[in-house]
Amino acid sequence: MTTTTLVRYVWDDRIKVGLPLIDNQHRELIEAINDLAEAIEGNQGSTAVKKLIAFLKGYAEWHFDQEENCAFRHQCPLAETNQKAHVRFLEMLAQWHREYTESGASEEQARKIHTALGEWLVDHIYKIDTNLAKEIQAQPSA
View (cartoon, rainbow, N blue to C red):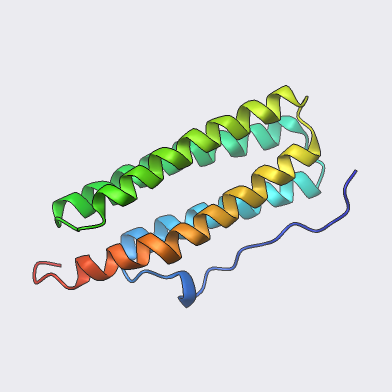
């Protein structure tokens, strides 16, 4: 069993994009990733981990749809880049879930998923979502 403490992500102004709807959804994703860390470290078992991965997948799909609709509605130049990043993420998440199942629900694989999810989300918010939000906020109708 691994004893290294998993990263807990903190919601703060550095990852806030300035669109309340999107920020609230990002906060929910971060909380779910932190809940995944708690489940792994608390030895809550594969059922709890699989349930959290399923929640993250479903919530991410819903959030991505909301975010993409907003970007396309505002004709943001980054809309297509954002959409492609979301598709890649969902493909990666499906792969990670398969690997977790195939590993016999190993803690090591669960930890890799947690790390990958958190790093991807924060990186995506910094590199794409913040710029997407700036485009939306710069429009008179925003």
